[in-house]
Length: 252
Image (cartoon, rainbow, N blue to C red; front, side, top):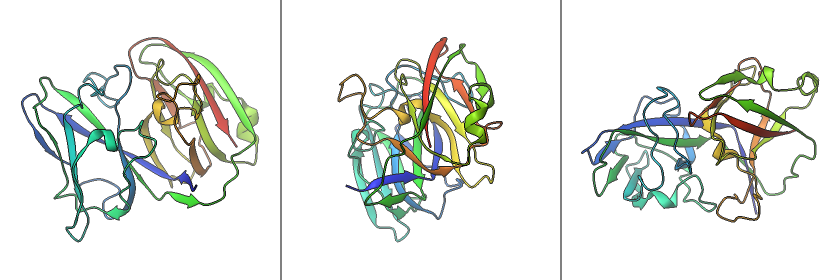
């Protein structure tokens, strides 16, 4: 089984208006013209607010029950026709893959029944992913546990021991242990700004084993392509409006 090593995960925010059924995927995105590996609609287990405006509710699984997506490649060939969100939701361990440059002018998201309230649909786009047939999961790790007040945002510098910053190794994976009960947003930056990982929900970093619950686990860890994290400019922000305790493991 191949292992996915992620390099870029870009967030697309789609404002959903009450009473409107069909939406286009924005075209002015940093990954336009890039080969997209996969896309994932976020359906968080617990309510959270838009990572940008901090107010609008993010759509949950119940909100997305009648949500479908159609994708076309740059040659105008249809890749996905009216595919249910369940096929690409972030919790799907075997999602449909894209593996193509998209014609964003043709791609659309629609609802068979228009949403009843304004909300935000969050779509994550993965590109630049490396696949390896044989990959050794990093054996070194450092785990940090820290409180996070409601809506609080702090830099990694405040939570990471200086020892890991001084290590010559780069970060190769991240695990957020209580992502479902204590949701937060991660902004990951490297020193050369070669990565695009902004406002990633911590449920994307769920452990591969989570209390024995298959529904809460993911088949593969979120592994990154040797991320040289800039701890001063990488941040975490509480997502639900409630104080929480965060537990994050960095693999290196």
